[in-house]
Image 1 (spheres, rainbow, N blue to C red):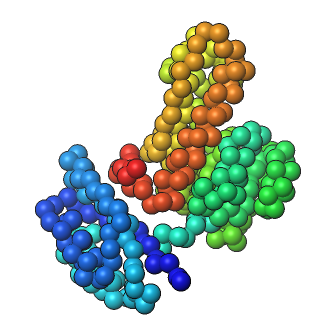
Image 2 (cartoon, helix red, strand yellow):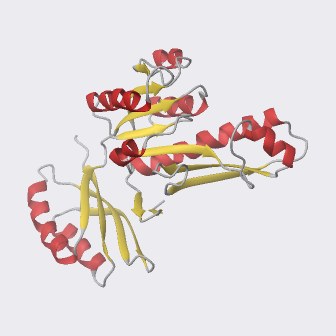
Image 3 (cartoon, helix red, strand yellow):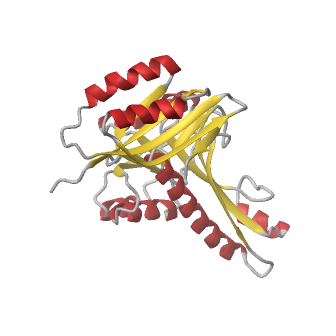
Length: 286
């Protein structure tokens, strides 16, 4: 027996009275049963966000008929909306340099189906992690940044992304700064992970710097990439306490675990359509 299909409806519009009622009524009239619903109106931006997961028990569900009905509401309320099959896994590219922990974690989670992505390629500015990609039978593309200019390298990367029809780009400790034109082209579909200490340490050997200052908390931040370095809308943050007895190496091991977990959570929120961009920040329905 074929299981009923599930869909996710996403709604963004100016905040006003009656949006939830009209959306819910349309879904009911279209014989779509609500499995999960969440909404939020932001008084600062006057934007309304809504995510609804629905199920269609009717095997002959007519999307065109639903689209016609919902478009009337969308036009009336000035709604931007998407309606997608919840089972679709986005075609994904993972960008890496020399650190493998986030890459290994993402590959494992995809392989055991705990992370609904379809990894099509791995792109790197170093050849070091090719063996890992080969073990998962995933194409590995080494783009030599030292040999090429940034524009040439990014042109090659875009060719790969276009060929694979990539919908999501994950920077799994990719130690390169993307150009503003590249970020603009893929904005909202590039997720990055970086360590974030309290206080924050930038540059070389951050764990040694943190150790020298006696920090008590390690952390990581996953965010969408914007044209401003490490300033994109935040998706997920995780922290863990440490103490005076830990060496920089022990701190780094803990930090890598935090980075892997935080990145995986952010990717999961994205692919499950739980994240809405709200100017410079995000609305996330957990």
